[in-house]
Length: 59
Image 1 (cartoon, rainbow, N blue to C red):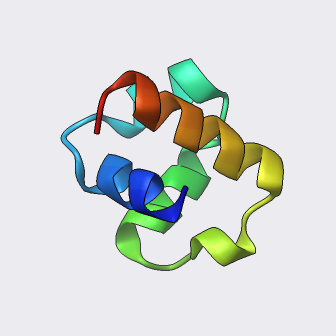
Image 2 (cartoon, one colour):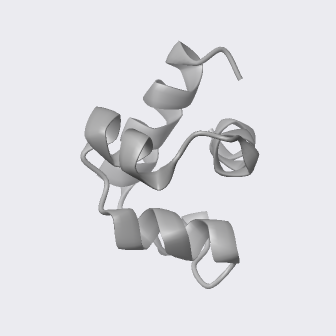
Image 3 (tube, rainbow, N blue to C red):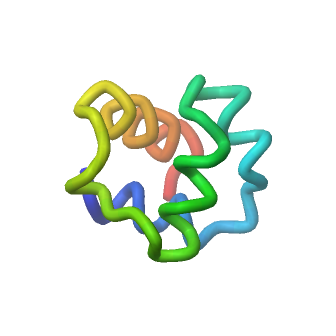
């Protein structure tokens, strides 16, 4: 899961698009991208949603 989410955060996919497809708060996505927050600090539900979305993008 961690590698998929890292690839998603490094991709060109906008925070808004990720939010639209996952429901994960844009602030959390921005924090992940900036390094302010780590995956370890997230709820399992959000991690699962991001991972599933990354799989649909074939990252």
